[in-house]
Length: 179
Image (cartoon, rainbow, N blue to C red; front, side, top):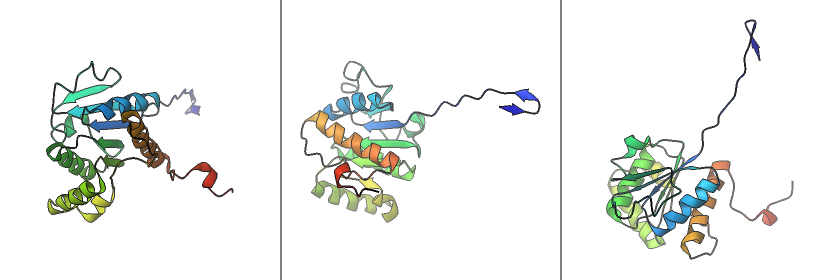
């Protein structure tokens, strides 16, 4: 490129998408491996140091022991992040969800049955989460792939994250109208 009589070489380095996983549970181990394979930067946050270990998460970019809402500044949680909340523990899950929604994270998903989600949504509204914020929460997290194993659940979660990232529908390609 020429500018002001000078030749310039510009090389762009795109920012890696980032997945923040709350809960160093079994599904998280597979989720981190799959996300890394797809080029995501990965962060696992858990308050339990016995679960959040390098031995359990050798593929993670960053392992943080702490309360998810308290480490949000430390990890720079923001609008470009996808957040998967996996602990099944209200005292970890809900503060993490609130923080991710308030910071405008592009994807916020949380595990739990439909009943758990219904009860959680009411508690979140009661704590001041707005209906618009709550509408962004994906729960139960992931696409319906029918799997039950931790790696299959991780695949369903990552499939939804990728679909959201690119504006995909999650509909099988053979069911989409031919243009």
